[in-house]
Length: 259
Image 1: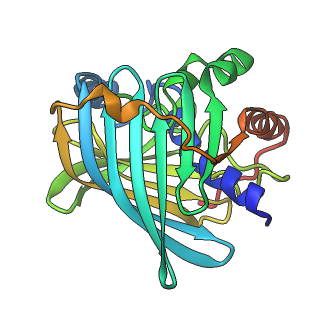
Image 2 (image 1 turned 30 degrees about the vertical axis):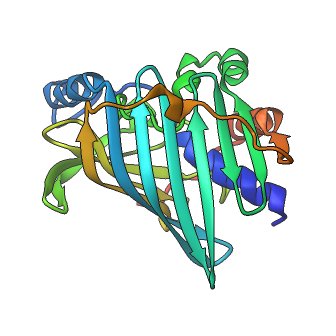
């Protein structure tokens, strides 16, 4: 896997979280789902600590940091991953129209034009991709969602749902880069996602995101969602690469997820 493919994999893994459809399906009944969705929709701003564990190239990589969200569709994530004796920082900013990823150690920046993606795919929800916490069921295909159980994340009561993401891994180049199945652990009191687990077609976890110390409707300055590439940065536009990969995944038959 070359460096460009690895960066695209990381960008798309985050991007899939924000592309989908609102659930309106089976048990335990639409009343619970409607109540959770209504609670989440009322969130105007959000801050949380986050831990991301990703399986890549046979290794487990753990990142820790913070996530901040503000309506309409603005997100900032700052994470640090320890690699041997090094700490790799990454900054992700969605300003409402563009998704930016910055790796300061290498002074590398990638960008995705979300407006272009939304227009090309006919999916307006792409404009709020990568972390719109006000739409907890957005990543999943509505006809595949199943309610698994009630559970807890730390001291927080949650409802656990499972389904296929809008861009499930297929039996071609997309396999291994996008999940075949996704679990959402949604807070019972506020509708906020507390944990997300992505699985490959074999049922092996690819990525786990856990959110703690969640703070809702706090003061969040707009300046957090403004990003300008730093001087001398190498900027790579990943818009076409993202669209091409999305098209490949839509055209190829999806590999069945493990039970």
